[in-house]
Length: 79
Image (cartoon, rainbow, N blue to C red; front, side, top):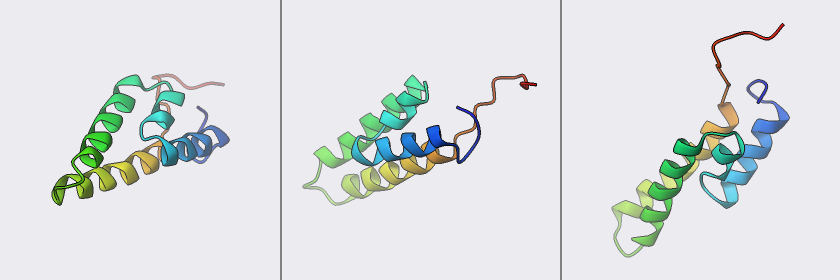
């Protein structure tokens, strides 16, 4: 991905709206994608309790914002 707010980040954020973690997967961040997906779907699966769905919703929103604000710091600068 290029920079924050680039077209790739916008696509990743839109992907996260429909499937939590998919945006991170599009960006190549597999571990982050798995963590977001497991926490969100785990929270939504426990819908009959009060706290887990709220935590799932907050993490879902966090995954969208994380994908939109991601900047790839690979340790070197392109010229």
